Length: 152
Image (cartoon, rainbow, N blue to C red):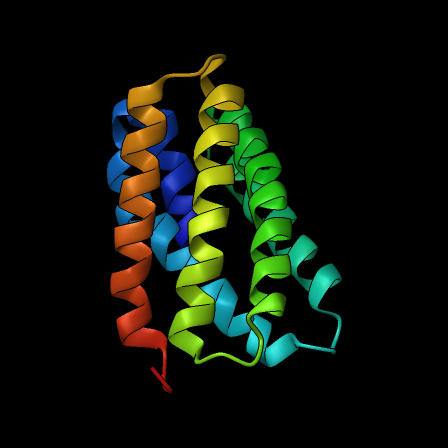
């Protein structure tokens, strides 16, 4: 959640130019950490716990900077959509090695998030922002997965 709050606040302060750096550092970390939570919460309230985590990140972002409200809303919606697809793909890949599950689900979640977030946050679609975020999330998520996947 800390990664999401930091990403939201930096986008609120620096605008769209911060999204690609955030995608690499913070969002790649978030997507990969969520996959670790899938392991811990599988069969134990996964869906409602993920929903609560996403909503809390949006509320905390808005509380730290009310100017980040639009960014927080975009973040919540984009992560709800991305989280849904991430969870579905992670579940489909459940019997695979953790690194395969993490990166396979992160590719789909990254695409969904990279499309939804900038459209909601900035009011339009930019292929450059989409492509930059998508690539940064995949590479960042992969690097984080190398650190976080115990059974690579």
